[in-house]
Each structure stands twice: as structure tokens, then as C-alpha cells.
Amino acid sequence: MASSRRNQSARPGAARLTASGHVAGRAGRSSPPGDEAAAGPLTGGDGGRARAETHGHAAGRGRRRLPPVRLAPREELAAAARVAPLLRAARDLSRWAGSTHQLTSSGGLAPDQAVAAAEALELAHREVEAAFRVAVATGMLARPGADSGPAGCGDVLAAGDAEEVLQAWDSALAAILTAEDLDGLATALYTVGGPVRMDGLFDAYAAAAGTRRSTRATDRTATDQAAADQAAADRGQEPDEAAALSYALETLADLAVVELGTDESPGGLTVALSPLGVWGIHRRLRAQGWHVPVLGSSGRNGAAGLLATLASCDAEDGEAEIGGWLAQREPAQAAAELIEAAASGSPGLRGAAFAVLDRIGVVAGPAVRAALAQPVLRAHAAVWLHEHGEEAELGPQDRTWLLVDLGAGLLEEADPRDVVAELLPELPADAQAEIVAGLWQVSHPGVTDLLTALSDYHPDPAVARAARKAAFKARSPAAGRGPIAPADGPVS
Image 1 (cartoon, one colour):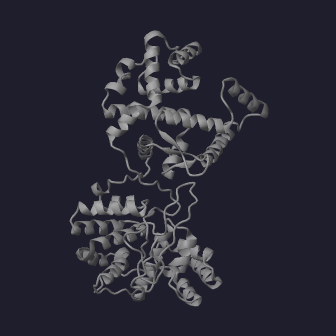
Image 2 (spheres, rainbow, N blue to C red; image 1 turned 90 degrees about the horizontal axis):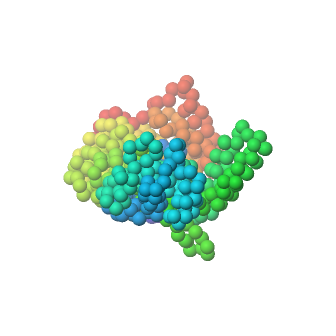
Image 3 (tube, rainbow, N blue to C red; image 1 turned 180 degrees about the vertical axis):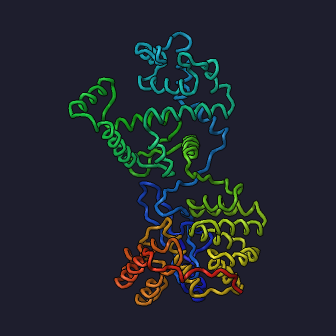
């Protein structure tokens, strides 16, 4: 990624980051759970306000963020659901069972009927089991005493509209994920946001399967566990995790949840969520309270929605989101929304908002000047105005507070080692130590975390020692922290 160091000499105190970059987390791309990709480099420098070069997280440090996704048109999704093999097998099973066979009193297929269904429909025994779960979950097949059945839902694939088909498919997805204990696997695929090598997926699945097995076996003796394993084998179930993963992926593929592929390495198999799978897992995660941003929807949301979406975007998608959002607003309105979002957001969101304001330009000037009156925005606004040719004072206390705010914003997502390597101005170690020694006085909620990172990862012993002492003072209630804070009044 390119770095921007313009106007450094005029703005001692922190790194400069550009609007087209990593405007929220500002230290490289976010790493989803299980992804070991390193955060990208930070832009260094000695300017007054940090922004980064590729879009990234604005979440709290350590909080997992889900990547933004593009949702396919609903008609396209419904078309894929109509031809999903497992949904069609459920329809065929409901017709077969409803016309000539009776369910047991518990609402299941008797063993002999399951065998007959497998033969009649040319399905494997486990496929019949999965199809039966889906048929019941979607209402294609009614259990004893239930009102719905084939007459009500069996023809939804042929005659239902897009919403009805998607509702049936969504019910089928819930039934399969619950019955096969695949919620975690599907969520992991969503989190990665792209194809996953089969060997890596197997490792994750095997670890999860081992955890589940240990939990279930906590109160079992070795004899009991062996008997349970033998019983599973007698039922035709393979205890080997590789076979279990293979069956799980086949089931998900039959429901059109995942797509199997290959990568460049010989024999390298991959698996990824299909567009239908992305839609289904997105729907489930949103219902569970996750923030699940959708690309292409930012224009309909306020500035907070835009910044939240940018939190996980790469540079190309982020530029498209910013352009679409700005195109639906007058520049002055956009600036006002961004200032409002910055005032109530995290340090990372503040940097993101002022980065997007760069795209608006001088028209945003009045809104930015008004932001000088807000303590948490004053320093950011002063630097922005200076960069756009207006007079705005940035005193020593403002610069020190801004340094902490920048560090806090970067630590929201970046590796602390990268933050420490690039945050401080390019000064001799003794000068850096002097700056760090006074940071405990800054009235900022992120100062302790920043000082801890500096004490842990700064390569110079004197600077690390100064950070350690300052962190101790910052944690001490008796230290009387608070003399250094952004000024309350406007700056002329």
C-alpha cells in the first residue's frame, strides 16, 4: 500500500493517513478469526492526525468484526434455492410419504419406510434423514397433529414466489445447521469471506468436533465411551472426523449453502459459501445481534452506517462505498453527518470521518470549523483546516491528546507491534522517552492501553521503561490524571 507523508514538517506529532485508505482501523486489513495474515504497514510521519491507506476495522480492540458482503438479488437467490438438491429431495420425500405411507406416532419414518424411501427416491440413507428433517422444517411434511403438509408447502418450489421459496430454504438451513451441529462451521466460512483450503477447514472442524466430544464424554467412563463409539459404528456413522466433515460439506452443498472448488496447488480443494449461503448466514448472524455490513447499502444509511461498513472494506470496495454515499447527499449535508458520527464514535471512527471529509473538500469547511468547539474533535478539526488552507491553532496539549487518540484508533484493529513501530514522531530515543513519560496525564480512555503497548513492544529500553512508568501512573487513582486534555473552546 502507498504511504502519504505530505506536509509532515508542518504537523509534528503523529502519522498522516489518506482518505482513500484504511479509514477506520488504519493499520492494515482486518484479520478474521483464524486468519493469520499480518496487518499491513502503517503510514509513518510527524503530522497532526493519522489516517491509513486501506479500509479496516473501527471496532474495539480485540472485538471480532465480520466482513462486509454483497447480497445477490432475491430472484437470483430464489432461483438457486429452487434447484437445491436437498430441498427437491425433501419435496419428493414429502410426496412419497404423504401419498402412500404413514409416519410413526413420534412423527418420524419407520426404519423399513426409510429403506423403502431410499430405494424409491434413489437416495442414500443419510440423504433420506436430511431430506426428512428439511421436509418437516419447511412444512412440506406434517408430523401427526400438525396442520400443514404437502398440500400447503410441497409445491412451493414450483409455484411459490421468491419470498416463499427463500423462507422455505431458510427453514431448511436452520434445520440442517442445528441437526448437524454446523453453525460454527458456516459462521467461520462467512467470517473468512472467501474460499478456504480444505485442509485448514478440516483442522478447525476436527478441533471443534474434539471439543464437542469431550464435553459430551465428561461424565462417561472409558467403557461407556467405547460402547457409544461402537453404537455409532453400528448405526453406520463414521467416527473419523474427516468422514464427518466430508458428509457435512456434502449436505451443505446439496442445500446450495457452499460451493466446492480447487486452488492453484495440486490437489488443493477449497470450500466457500455460495451467494445463497452468504444470504442465509448473514440473515442468521443479524438475527443473533451481529453487525453484518452489506456492500452497496451505505448510501441508504447515515454516516455511522458508512463508517461501520468501511470498517472491514478493502480499498477498492471502500472507495465504491464512499463514492456511492457521497453521491446521494449534498456536500454540506454529508459533512454535517460525518461530524455528528465522529463526535459520538470511537477514535478509529473519528479518523475515518475526517478522512472521508477530505473527499468533500473545502465545502466541508464550515462544518469542520464548528467542530472545533467539541473537545474530542478539536484537534482533528484543527489539522483538517490547516491542511485545507485555513488558520487553526494546534497547541501542545492538543497535539499530545491527538497522539493518544491516534494510537487508540490504530490499536482498535492493528497489531500493537505495528502501531508502536510507526506512531511516535521520528525523534531520537531520549526525545521519544520524554514524550511518552508525560502521556499518563492525557485525559483519554485509551491512554493506558497505548502506554501498555509502548512498554511491551517499543525496541528502545529507555522508551519502554518510560511507558511502563507512565502506564503505572495512568492506572493509579491517586495519580491525578487529567491536566492534558483537548481545549473546550473554538480556535481562531
